[in-house]
Length: 238
Image (cartoon, rainbow, N blue to C red; front, top):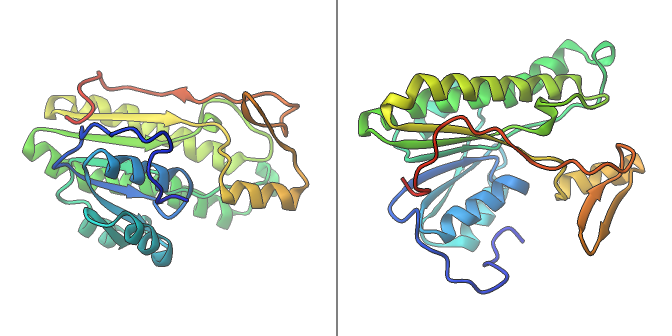
């Protein structure tokens, strides 16, 4: 349940108190978890997703300081209106692909890049001027290990996430003097509802043990998250 409180009953430090955050792809999976975490640490969170119902439900569970925003990250005008006054931007929205290059249609290639690469670019493009004006800001782009290593039958997805990593590096260099930190994180496979449904359709193996979960579709090898940080670290809430 993306709206639940921390399991261990910890009192969360209000590191983001008074900060305005936007999380794209907040309707499920990583995006919902990020939105929940920022909210728990005091941020005013805008939960953005192309699915209005999913973010409205999560915002309702979180309560005060959470607002649902219906947002298609491919649409520049929608993005412009949602990103102008942010302290924190987390770009999670993304879609996948399941074909090799010869089997990938141009429509699929362009759709994957439109959400994953163009969507991240547009959100950064329109969030940065406001952050620069205030002299501070933090952007986190959720990329993937797929952007660092090749995965079978994921040509468009791997290329789009590689583009997100390269964009992150360029933005970090361009805007460090503006007081804006730009970083990327590169998760491996996440045990989400979407992945679970996909793996069941494919007859793939997702195994659990006392040491965690792992995807056995790559010969049982565990894919660990990799940091793709590019900006110098500062205090988390700054």
